[in-house]
Length: 129
Figure (cartoon, rainbow, N blue to C red):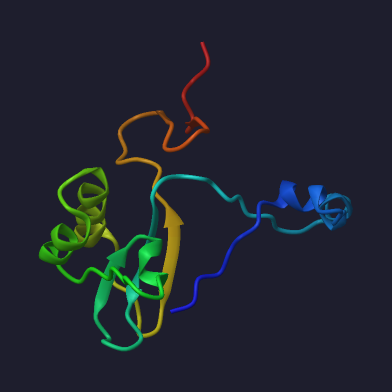
Protein backbone atom coordinates (compact mmCIF):
# COMPACT_ATOMS: atom_id res chain seq x y z
CA UNK A 1 0.00 0.00 0.00
CA UNK A 2 1.14 3.53 -0.69
CA UNK A 3 1.25 6.23 2.01
CA UNK A 4 0.56 9.78 0.80
CA UNK A 5 1.90 12.65 2.90
CA UNK A 6 -0.49 15.54 3.55
CA UNK A 7 1.11 18.95 3.91
CA UNK A 8 -0.17 21.57 6.32
CA UNK A 9 -1.34 24.59 4.32
CA UNK A 10 0.60 27.02 6.48
CA UNK A 11 3.81 25.05 5.86
CA UNK A 12 3.60 25.72 2.12
CA UNK A 13 4.37 29.39 2.82
CA UNK A 14 7.67 28.38 4.45
CA UNK A 15 8.53 26.53 1.23
CA UNK A 16 7.94 29.70 -0.81
CA UNK A 17 4.56 28.59 -2.18
CA UNK A 18 2.24 31.59 -1.80
CA UNK A 19 -0.78 29.99 -3.47
CA UNK A 20 -2.45 29.66 -0.05
CA UNK A 21 -2.35 33.42 0.41
CA UNK A 22 -3.74 33.94 -3.10
CA UNK A 23 -6.52 31.39 -2.47
CA UNK A 24 -7.77 33.43 0.49
CA UNK A 25 -8.84 36.10 -1.99
CA UNK A 26 -11.28 33.74 -3.73
CA UNK A 27 -14.24 31.66 -2.64
CA UNK A 28 -13.52 27.98 -2.22
CA UNK A 29 -13.17 25.11 0.19
CA UNK A 30 -10.34 24.52 2.62
CA UNK A 31 -9.96 21.51 4.86
CA UNK A 32 -8.09 21.31 8.14
CA UNK A 33 -5.29 18.92 8.93
CA UNK A 34 -5.32 18.01 12.62
CA UNK A 35 -2.27 16.40 14.20
CA UNK A 36 -3.17 13.61 16.56
CA UNK A 37 -1.42 10.50 17.70
CA UNK A 38 -1.25 7.80 16.55
CA UNK A 39 -2.13 8.02 12.88
CA UNK A 40 -4.82 5.42 12.17
CA UNK A 41 -5.14 3.63 8.84
CA UNK A 42 -8.24 1.54 8.08
CA UNK A 43 -10.12 0.13 5.16
CA UNK A 44 -10.43 -2.93 2.97
CA UNK A 45 -7.04 -4.45 2.25
CA UNK A 46 -6.47 -4.53 -1.53
CA UNK A 47 -4.95 -8.04 -1.48
CA UNK A 48 -6.91 -9.88 1.22
CA UNK A 49 -10.19 -7.97 0.72
CA UNK A 50 -10.63 -7.95 4.51
CA UNK A 51 -11.34 -4.96 6.78
CA UNK A 52 -8.26 -3.89 8.76
CA UNK A 53 -6.97 -1.21 11.12
CA UNK A 54 -3.42 -0.17 11.84
CA UNK A 55 -0.99 2.65 12.33
CA UNK A 56 1.33 3.95 9.63
CA UNK A 57 3.17 0.64 10.13
CA UNK A 58 0.83 -0.85 7.50
CA UNK A 59 3.03 1.02 4.99
CA UNK A 60 6.33 -0.45 6.26
CA UNK A 61 8.45 -2.21 3.67
CA UNK A 62 9.72 -5.00 5.96
CA UNK A 63 7.73 -5.31 9.22
CA UNK A 64 4.16 -4.67 8.04
CA UNK A 65 1.59 -4.59 10.87
CA UNK A 66 -1.92 -5.06 9.45
CA UNK A 67 -4.60 -5.94 12.02
CA UNK A 68 -7.73 -7.86 11.04
CA UNK A 69 -8.60 -9.07 14.56
CA UNK A 70 -8.05 -8.11 18.20
CA UNK A 71 -5.53 -10.97 18.42
CA UNK A 72 -3.57 -9.38 15.55
CA UNK A 73 -3.52 -6.07 17.45
CA UNK A 74 -2.17 -7.72 20.60
CA UNK A 75 0.48 -9.62 18.61
CA UNK A 76 1.59 -6.55 16.62
CA UNK A 77 1.23 -3.80 19.24
CA UNK A 78 1.14 -5.44 22.69
CA UNK A 79 -1.38 -4.29 25.29
CA UNK A 80 -0.56 -0.58 25.69
CA UNK A 81 -2.31 2.62 24.67
CA UNK A 82 -1.86 2.13 20.91
CA UNK A 83 -3.35 -1.37 21.15
CA UNK A 84 -6.31 0.00 23.12
CA UNK A 85 -6.93 2.70 20.50
CA UNK A 86 -6.66 0.20 17.62
CA UNK A 87 -9.04 -2.22 19.34
CA UNK A 88 -11.63 0.56 19.68
CA UNK A 89 -11.10 1.48 16.02
CA UNK A 90 -11.54 -2.14 14.93
CA UNK A 91 -14.79 -2.33 16.87
CA UNK A 92 -16.27 1.03 15.87
CA UNK A 93 -14.92 2.36 12.57
CA UNK A 94 -17.26 1.81 9.61
CA UNK A 95 -16.41 -0.92 7.16
CA UNK A 96 -15.32 0.34 3.76
CA UNK A 97 -16.10 -0.54 0.19
CA UNK A 98 -13.61 -2.59 -1.80
CA UNK A 99 -10.35 -0.70 -2.28
CA UNK A 100 -11.16 2.15 0.11
CA UNK A 101 -8.43 2.99 2.62
CA UNK A 102 -8.54 5.96 4.97
CA UNK A 103 -5.99 7.62 7.20
CA UNK A 104 -6.63 9.99 10.08
CA UNK A 105 -5.01 11.05 13.29
CA UNK A 106 -6.48 9.89 16.59
CA UNK A 107 -7.62 12.80 18.79
CA UNK A 108 -9.40 11.09 21.69
CA UNK A 109 -12.27 8.83 22.69
CA UNK A 110 -14.87 11.56 23.22
CA UNK A 111 -16.77 13.01 26.11
CA UNK A 112 -14.35 15.84 26.74
CA UNK A 113 -14.11 19.36 25.35
CA UNK A 114 -10.35 19.46 25.12
CA UNK A 115 -7.74 17.00 23.85
CA UNK A 116 -3.94 17.12 23.63
CA UNK A 117 -3.06 14.05 21.54
CA UNK A 118 0.35 15.33 20.55
CA UNK A 119 1.76 18.81 21.17
CA UNK A 120 -1.28 20.91 20.23
CA UNK A 121 -4.38 21.23 22.41
CA UNK A 122 -7.70 21.15 20.53
CA UNK A 123 -10.87 22.67 22.00
CA UNK A 124 -14.13 21.41 20.53
CA UNK A 125 -16.70 24.03 21.44
CA UNK A 126 -16.38 24.54 25.16
CA UNK A 127 -18.40 27.58 26.15
CA UNK A 128 -16.31 30.57 27.16
CA UNK A 129 -17.49 32.01 30.46
